[in-house]
Length: 117
Image: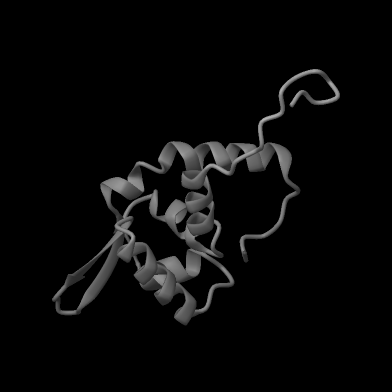
């Protein structure tokens, strides 16, 4: 049935892939942690310092979730001392262009805030 403007109106449909991406990356801290790891591997304490405002338990949960999604790999160096590092997988690194574009867009269009989420 034609609309008042004379054109056919198609119902809007949510893009399922985009909804999944924002559902995952939009979860508090996930995108920030991934973007932080774009600079290379980092230990837990280094990530905690870089992502101000995140608690130890939430950082641990998010890193586990990111690893489970195949975006981050956890590597344990038996040491001594024992060291744990987190780094992006190829799948995580594939997010670089999208995260870079989001960063540019946010810098140009959103008010400045701190990085505490």
